[in-house]
Length: 212
Image 1 (cartoon, rainbow, N blue to C red):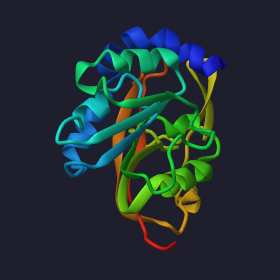
Image 2 (cartoon, rainbow, N blue to C red):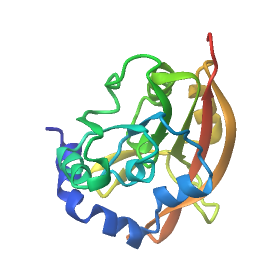
Image 3 (cartoon, one colour):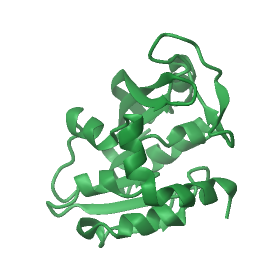
């Protein structure tokens, strides 16, 4: 098990409560966007954590799939009654994702890509997994915080892990031709309590372009 996986295993029992303290609400973001997922669709949550976003999409005959690097997070997700039938995997986002090509209609990747050094590879995996005209909603941490202060593009988070912050130009360079930007906004994300600032996310909705 990697150090990152062990860390998030330790966080899993209190993760949802911690998000409330830090002010980050991924379910609220998906709800307010809105990110429409049709009945019967297959939804993949990459970096699913405790399964809160998958729970939001449960019902209406949807097939739910998720993966996370932390076994503890996956165990927590399986405790949610509404997603007990979801197909959940312990898996690292840096590796090829555990889904066949063109097998999912919607991808969610929130508060996860800042831990991925090779962002272009993650976007390639989103493109590979999506069906033609399938949609994804992702967040990428910006180098500029909510007060307009530029933060290092690569910092240490919690004193232990590399955190990859990126400008929009950096993000745009990583998006492959097979993904079209439908909409993007800059949103406040979580508060970094020990340093006294609020980070921000590029939130981007992407569509899989057929035949690319």
